[in-house]
Image 1 (cartoon, rainbow, N blue to C red):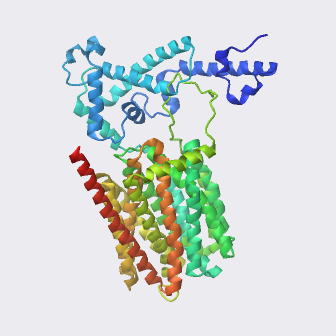
Image 2: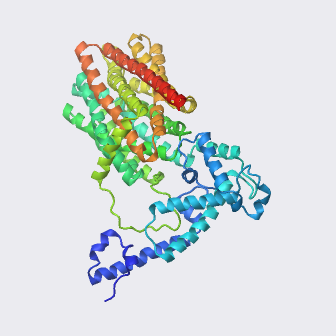
Amino acid sequence: MWRLPSSSTRKIPLRFRHLHNSGLGRILAYHISEFTTARRRDRRSLSSSSWLEELGVDNPNKIDPRRLYQYLKLETFQPDEIRDQFRMIEANYSSGNQTADDSSDKNGSGINRSQIQAFLLDRIGEIDSEDASPESKYEEEKTLSLREKFAVEEASRMWNLFKSDEGGILKEDEFVEVVRERARSLDRKRVLPLTLSMLLVGSSVGVVTPAMPFVVQNIGLTAGEYGLVVSAFALAKMTGNIPSAVLVERHGRKPYLVYTMAMTAVGVGGIGLASSFEQLYLCRLFTGLGVAGLSTAVTMTVTDISTPLNRASTFAPIMSAFSAGTALGPAIGGISVDYIGINPTFYAVGVSYIGLAAVNHMLLRETKQQHMEFPWHSDDDNGEPKATIRDSFESALGQWVPLLSQPDIRNVCIMNGFYWIALAGSQMTLLPLILTNPDGLAMTATNVGQVYMGMSIVQVLGNPVLAKMVDRIGKVPGILGGCTLISTAMATLPMCTETYQLAGILGIWATGSALLSTSPLAFISDKVDDQKRAQAIALLRTSGDVGFLIGASSMGAIADWTSSLDLAMQSSSGILLTATGWFAVRNWLNLQIEKEKEHSA
């Protein structure tokens, strides 16, 4: 009886192998094997540049920066790290690898194209061997031949990144300068669509902002109950952070930049139908779950396309776009509430999130890279079972303990928690009530929209400048400066008696928020490798959500207990200022410990 060759059996996708014992199954398996072999053959027949275009590489004539960083094993992108890689190539791939065309440059003062080619051939083989499945002798020889050909073409693309001419020598300083310059530059082709998406998301969020205080008045909630409604968002987001990080790592970024919009649409649109505390609380839970997935996907997309040298600068246009949306949104929302009513405003925003899902589906591209791909890799399933969601969830939780054992990560997570205690209690719970208090400022929805629009404009204008400053002076000074500005604004806001005073204080507040929009995320992204980054960011977000949950509910309760919104606001300021001082001292002590270790070594 005819049997499928064992080498072909390996190529049968796992979901079809149970059919292999039947005659029909063997025929089906044979055709599946032929199809997948043909697909491999088709991919191998592609030219290297055509294959790179298929992967979405912007310029097939120059090496994709992300592939360059993987070849060089760069993590910190500091000059010493790049110099070490250059010197390794210079020392390990010296004169024996030079061609006749390079004979005039054997002075050991740099590297040539042939040395880069030899280095890439070894690196490609090393990367390929990590994920390669067993091959027959013929397939192994064919792969080796393709690998050599690809190394020649990849070396040409890498050389074109550094030099405009074919020959010559690449000097160490030039190598370091080009790599660092490339690592500092923004990936505008990938950043711009995400920026547009966040502009639209921010607009939808901003429309809702001036409407919420009037929902509270219509339903008849106290400050404490409103705090619980605000904290429901944090509770859902905190619950959703770990699953979101697992799913975004498992399925990629784009699906959760699209489908989370639907859940957010249900939550926001439902607020227009809510007529009780319980219904409003449930709608906020749905919104929090949707935002948990969306924020994780956005953050991981940014870390995919950035390096430690430009991470804050890459976050800046995206956060600026969100802030610009939240600047435009309140103005639209305030006018909408005054002219068409509260409930229709929420219905319109819910529908807009569905439209945003379609926009993201059309504009955004997947940025997650599990493994480096090469033209000879096949697309067929190798039959190895993937980890289950439960396994991934347990693995994610297991990463949190070692992450928290690192002082830098533990300190910034604690600081982030206290920041959100203060922010959720003040800006998200107390400030809207202060602005609309009938016995105080008694602002209309349009006026509230103008206040939040002004704060967002300050963030839009400040984000790019402050992000570049953070990249230069460091993330810790950015965190300390931002928290100090916000706590100062919180403490002095109850003393304002004139509109211009309120404007100045809220401007300082918004400047501090601009500093903190990128600093903590950039800080924690720099401290971990690619495999742990998703969970490190999830840990940071969860610490913030715990603070959000505590701050919104506790500050509302303090306002009810003391019958004073002003006293509750100043309590938020005291909490944040105390935490800022603690964070400054802890970082100074850690720095001294590191210096002592270096000195003793």
